[in-house]
Image (cartoon, rainbow, N blue to C red; front, side, top):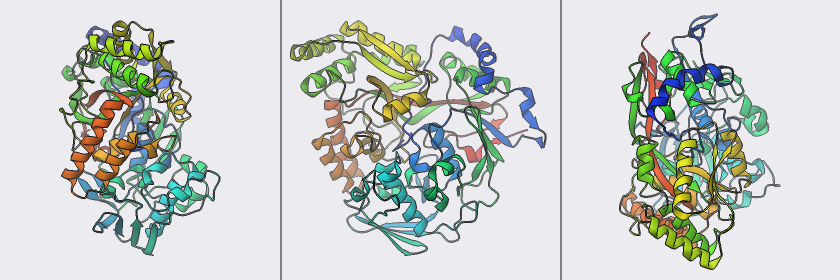
Length: 559
């Protein structure tokens, strides 16, 4: 999730067991009804009358409040992206489209951009949105004193480094932002960045009200946005309902009256509600239904390529994973995983084994970079690599992969550690955290003490959103999504070279060279690309966008 989500920490990963288990799904909803928010027939209407125009969708509880620059999970991303508009968005196929920007013009070497805003922009409370609003919002996001998890997404703006004092002035501004007038903002970068017009589509670049800057904690719970919806109600761990904002004049005009995000502790329970007619759209199919959901007559099935890259991260600080010993062990573990077998047995071929660090729908994706075969299953080579690592320092302890127990990750994590254990002859275990939120917090605080499920799903469809956000040194040490704290001068230099190349095709070639460094170092172990596997009620018309999530504003119901 550039900085998201969009990293997808847990909720969106999809796994599968045997088809015969599907018959037991309905019972799960009854057991979990109180905690999962399972609906009933009575939910179809409230005291005010028909709710047919309110769309019900599944969710998990957002990890943090709804300040865009402090959102790093998919649950929060989905909601924030509906209550805020930014300079740009992307079509369902990933093409850049202007929203609040009238134009974004670069100078000759992509070190300066002039942003012209459309007229008469406002937040839902009537507060005007001007160039100054964007300058203050971006400065708030970048300033370390404000502790925003998406801060590093703005690192290429001039003056960013001077704002990295956690004890500094919370109101200090980025020196590279120059407000020319209400509709014109000039942005000076500290290095060329040809991806900048795409990057401003990241959630960290969304504008926030002046009230957020003054009291971010309160604002995060009761946000004032400028998007097509606004928050109607929020009951923690149960439900977050958005209602259509009647004052919205932007291009994403909703075709429904609101979106009701129902928090589920289990996708099994959500799937049962979908089939029972108590949920309109399910964004991920649970393990037990992957083999059968496409034949289900009570729902419309979706299965297509998406932008989600799934991996697990082995932190650079983990014992036995530094230097040459670490490089050998990472390669051994990668080659000890039978991705094809897991894709077939667990996922019923709704994932594709990874061949690089992007995703099939992202420009620059390649199936030909792994010339050494490090992403291919080879038990003999894996054992040899492990033996060479033992010669440097004998292995001790257990190799663990952490995941959120409220996600659908258990089956594939179990299968992965079993493959590693069987090939390498070591103790390898699954390491469940009670919730994805708990795991996310442990990752951010560097307290996991094990490998952990990870992945990327960029806010903007550009290779920079995956490679820089996930592995550049500037994103390490809690400053971004490089949660394994990988640092490579060789990789960073190639990324800088790609960023300075205004020709996208030439930039992509350099990004691919940078990926070859990642294939050598394996800061994360690439696993697979996840298809968009989802479903909607028979009466619901729903499409999915470039992020692989529902195109919420265009969802309609036929009754």
